[in-house]
Amino acid sequence: MNYVKTGFLLVALTMLFVWIGGYFGGQIGAGYAFLFALLMNAGAYWFSDRIVLSMYGAKEASKEEIPELYDILKELTDSARLPMPRLYISPQNSPNAFATGRNPRHSAVCVTQGILNLLNREELKGVLAHELSHIKNRDTLIMTVAATIAGAITMLASWARWAAIFGGFGGRGGTRRDGNAFAYLFMLIFAPIAAMLIQFAVSRSREYAADKRGAYIAGGSAGLASALLKLEKGVKSFPMNANPTTAHIFIVNPLRGNGIVVLFSTHPSIQKRVEALNNIKIQ
Image (cartoon, rainbow, N blue to C red; front, side):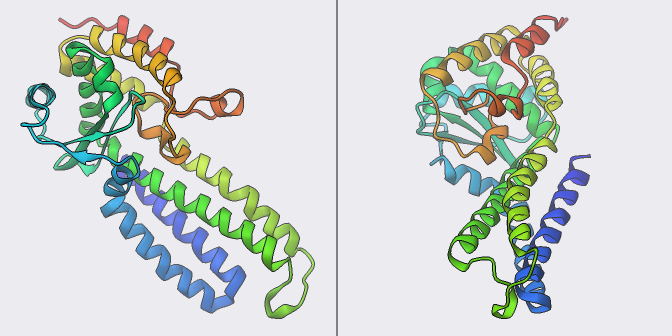
């Protein structure tokens, strides 16, 4: 199912680029936009994991650098029957974690320095098990591709905004056309909404599923439940300067906000997640 969603997002991105290219440059503009969209699609599929990791300054860590965390991850991957993912550390003080990669054989788990300072061994075990669940469920493909595409759409919105400011609302060939102002306005409104819709392709239900499977991988739900409560407080105390288009990849929402930010959150509430975890009975 995630491969179908990914294909849909890539096709949607292509159509959006071609439409905008055609609007500004006619058939020639549409052709260039189509080629650019193909390159963007390839980059989103093959390199989105590297893009996201680089955004947060993550560096790959060896077993010698963090032996305890490495051993926990190895224990969990054996339990989940997964290949060992690459392990990354982000220097962010905000406690959080995410997984990325297009499939289990090309996957990575990233934790922040803040989470290492905050959680104990059992809680880290629960967090890593949750991230391995995303890898096993192949959520990471749609999560990282959605982040890359949402970023591209917001970039288009920025371009349109500057074009409106410096280029006015004249039509192609220097002639003013009725409706151009409405077309620019449509693009300025549509692009951010499209970015949110793309992130909605990553359903909130995947967090509940990852929590549940993670509890089974870890051999219990108490560690993850405790970790989520600590992370909720930790993020409030040490908010992350995170790009909103990548918020959905983290185990807890790294953004602090109220109102519409909460309304469009890709994460269920921590309280509901903890309640669901406490109801899991593992034999």
